[in-house]
Structure formats: structure tokens, C-alpha cells
Image (cartoon, rainbow, N blue to C red; front, side, top):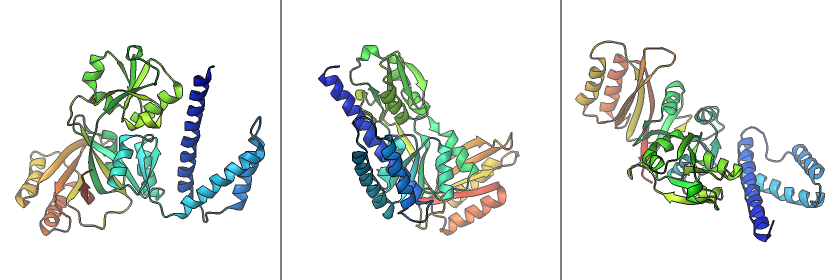
Length: 352
């Protein structure tokens, strides 16, 4: 190895150290919800014992112990703060994380592997809030999220619609001619079909856009590239090969903010879920309730009910507040006409 190669390896190790420290602090914030006090001398003694035992080679035990003393002090400091946690699906750099920061910058975004993990942690109180995508302007609803909304008791307390601009990312030293395979979330791949076909790339699904970027950074696949946000290039030491590769410039995703409890503020939009019996004209009669009340519908979707084959759940969003008399009356009529009506929430949107 020459000097430059050694320095590149050092840079990658430094990057991993900082990333690991961030992950450790995130876990410390989650741990705060499960223990009685910030300071636990017995646990800290075990940490120092492990540090001394694993300090080998050129790393002196005394140096490692002083380093971890500073890490534990920082962990205590952040645990003492009244920080609010918001969970998102994916790795750091995901579009959901960007949406959480746009919705409320003071929140601490915590990554989770699955959408169901976000819902579960909100319901158990391990997270103050969650944020998930519900629909995309090009590819339509995010079906897994809609199924979870139908099957859990979380509440929607806010929404934000984010413009989505995809980038093609690759390892820094790779040329465009080397690229054969592109990894990303299925939605992102679908939103960039024309670009992928034009450049004759083989599309392979991955659980998350940012997760694909992290995988490429870790595994160093020279013939591979990923579709993700430009922030991922900085986070995972990749280069931006091409920007704005989505098929349509108007590409946008709507995200909703989840809570264990409904919003105490007066909202401007409501979301409901309900089921209908199999009778002619039933859906028309439901829509007529809102038409007669002069209430504007902004979304209507249907999803099969997995626990009851042949049945459908309808997702309905409409403008108004659940404290307004005409909305209250419309909901009463709706409750009398449908099965399993659930008010997901009345909330306000935010423009980034």
C-alpha cells in the first residue's frame, strides 16, 4: 500500500468509528425509556472491564479506558436531556429521515429495519413519534404502511409531502462504464424506470434506499451502484454519478406522523378507515354523505382485508376538523352506514 491508500483506509475507519458512536448514543436514548436512572455504576464497571480486556496490540488499556470515560459522560449528558424520538424505516440518509427533520428539526430520528417496528415502538412508548410514507405521486400507495394503519391503533397527528429527487451513487473510484447493477428500494427503482432502462442497468430490490448506500459502502462492489438521496453520498463515502434521475420532476411522497395518542391541536384534515358490506350502491351512498355535507375528499383507496378474504377496507381522507358540526354529523352518518369505522386522526399538514 502507498500513502494515499493507507490514508483512504484510515478515513473509512474514522467514518465507521463516528457512525458507531452515533448508533451507541441512539441506543442510549432508547435505553433511557427502560431503566430507572441515568447513572448505573455496576453496568459502567462492566463496560470498563470489557474495554480493558479487549485493549490489545498497540492500544493501551489506559487509553481505551479514558476514551470510554468520555463516551459514557456524553451518554449520560444526552440521556438527561428531554429529547423526543421519532422512528423511521431504513438507514440514516433515508427520505423518511429527511421528512422527519423537515417536519420537526428538534426530534431525534431513530432508524428501524421494518415499518412494523416503527408502529410497534410507537404503540409501546419506546418512540414518541413515528414517520412513514403512505403514498407516492408516481407509484401510488405504500401498501404495507396502509395495512399497518388498518391493523393497529396508532393515530396520525401530522403530514408532510416531500419532493423526491433521486441520485445515482457509486464508489468514488468507479467509472460509469463499470456499472452493471443498481440497488434500491422497489419504489425508488419504479420511480426511475426510464433511467435504468436507458443505461441498461440490472435493477435489484433492497429494503431501503439509504440501506443500499450503506451496503455498497461496506461491501465495495465495484460493478454496483445505488439509487438514493444525495445526502447518502456524504454519509457513506460515495460519489454522485447522476442527479435527478426520477422519471418525472413532480415526483413527491406524502408522509404521515404517528403517535400513540391523537393530536390535541385543531386539525384541517381527517383520515378514516372503514369496511363495507357487499351491496350495490354502498360506496356511492358513502360518498354522497360527504357530497351532501360539502366536504372535499382528498384521497380514497381500497385494500383487501387479510383477515377476511373478499372484504375491502377503504381509506378516506377529507378536508375539515372533527370538531366542526358538519364533519361530526357526516361521521355519525358514516358510522351508521359502514362496518369497523376507525378515525385515524385529525391533523395539520406542513409544507417543507
